[in-house]
Image (cartoon, rainbow, N blue to C red; front, side, top):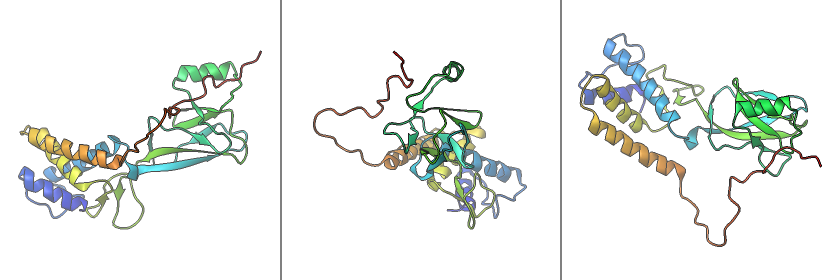
Length: 231
């Protein structure tokens, strides 16, 4: 379904005439509908780590650079994402506090494993990645709309645009939110939306592997103390 088709479907339910155009319409109801489509699409995309929007970004070291810009389509890094280096057998060490990062920076610790943090719209890594060494991590792209031709983009701008995620979910989300905005009863519509969202999230995760046998090393085990310790 295109943006126009989705909005026409919403209009049938909420009692509006089906529009011939939505993105270029100047009628107040359809201007609101267009804005709601973009708002709900963004909300859906940011509410879950969808496999379709997952991408890998590669940082290439030169031995001196410690600050790296995000990719152009960067929306967010997954909460449990790790940064992996081509020169190490363990993930780089995340620093969860800005104050802790500042402490390590000022006190000039010698790191056993490169440490990283995100602030100021950049990923910062200490010490600098060695020349020709790469580091990679997963992130979620903000390119949630597919045009009829050309590259994916951040939001709807044309009637022929398509939502890259589930368009039925977008439709149901717009229905309950439109009704809520107008002070109409929307509880049942919201339940329909949430039920479909839950099913799609479960399906997106895929099947889980059944492990049999003795306990293994937990996935999130990291170096206990990432700095070098002098005698």
